[in-house]
Image (cartoon, rainbow, N blue to C red; front, side, top):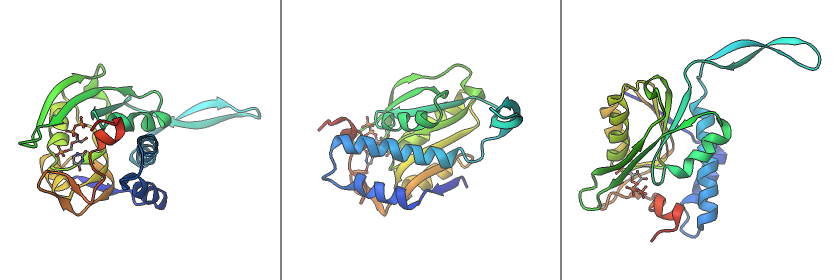
Length: 209
Ligand code: PRP
Ligand code: URA
């Protein structure tokens, strides 16, 4: 089974409660999504390989550490994943950003692709797919399948809130990826929304509806 990491740090829990609150406005919602993405990025990059290199401090030369290996790529699933991009870039400004556009058909709840633009040599990169919500799992599964079809084999998925149904489906479909999440909620409702959840992440980020 894929590795599920729940980031239940007290600061994350505190901010997540504000995010869930129906009275939280767009500005604060966007700020918190960005901050939570920073926390998740910190955790998700914990095992990146390091290499030695020489630097000179004001005092002396020393062998220092830097992240080695393949370049990183951040891939938000449009639209709501966009809200997490800047939080990750705050910590990894050199990451390349690709975009995969998917929306859930409101009747069937299945993902429909409408856009894709990926960085060059995507198959060689260490990838972080971003989407604040993992509900039925359809969107994440389809985005990750698409990346695997392009040859990617080092894929991590970062989401803020998940439903148990979505986690299970994603783990079954892609047992090789790491899933980072701030909380796994109780269930999905009849419309495919996470309960208790935070509502429609895209609408709350961008003020639509
Ligand atoms: C939301 C969310 C995920 C998807 C999750 O996007 O951002 O992409 O639903 O649901 P799933 O796990 O059942 O696929 P939505 O389709 O509402 O599009 P939006 O981001 O453009 O609002
Ligand atoms: N997408 C959202 O934005 N919210 C949910 O609860 C489920 C899917």
